[in-house]
Image 1 (tube, rainbow, N blue to C red):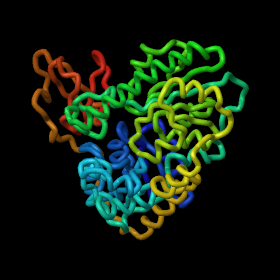
Image 2: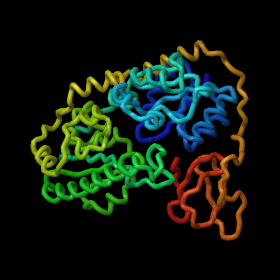
Image 3: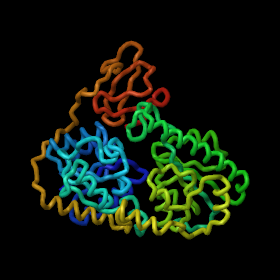
Length: 425
């Protein structure tokens, strides 16, 4: 049986999906790992898998993908890339926020099995979400399995002491057509998040400049942006001595070579803990009270400077009580066996499922269901050409468009300069 695992991001999912693939091969499956956005459609049409393991369907492109796979007789399994929320915090949310976390799209008719992290959120999905309980399996915290892999080791070579600043302020870079969680830019919620992120980013830039000024001879400084956050403002505002990692650089690779982590309420604090790296939460922007308390919380530059002067290197400073609560209420087990459990659940499911007659075409159907005003299928006078990086189809618009939704697959694409384009969602 052929299984295609479709990876959403190279920063974290690629390593996890490759570990899952290895576990599935132990059961005798033929497994390929492919990029979801840029190769998902081609993978289905060319390789014709019996099963696809896909990211959580959260938009028209993803929804269309699983719908077609199901229509063509392919078994569809989704793996959630995030842990969701614990019950206590989830019940405090308004209905709109609950829908965003559970998923605004009813994907249940097209999904045969959903793989989640913790049991509490799994129960919430079954009670208030789209999937029935018998089609959801809680596996544990996928994101942390790579740190238990035998081949994963920190760099122990002699090198200067290094601080990594891991940002978390992507809302600062959003625009009305594309912002976090699909919330309209003119909404009150979005404006408040923008204000919080903007103030925190400004504080971070000022703090890093001060640390470099006074401690540049003692430490090396690195910065890694959160997925979806741009590097340009840091490149302009920080001294050249600060090494800024490329946006798609995996956190696991960066953490191998640092001694202290400064974050703003990130799961990277747990990754650091698994590597015995102390971490500090400076200007927290994470609304989850548990996750925000994993590391000591600091609110000012003076607190940050003092904490760094007193830090014990080579020893985690995680709040063990919070760490245990996170596993109990949010993430599920953090034990390096999550992919192993997920592969077992997948195998058991496939053993019981009825094999379907596959009817996969050799090419993905070319339709124009998402044609919008101002977008042209044929070139008109003065038009510029767009080439969708996802479905590879061309379309046209006037030059003033810097964002355009592909009329063939609905993917929203941004023009960066004259020719280069990037996927937004």
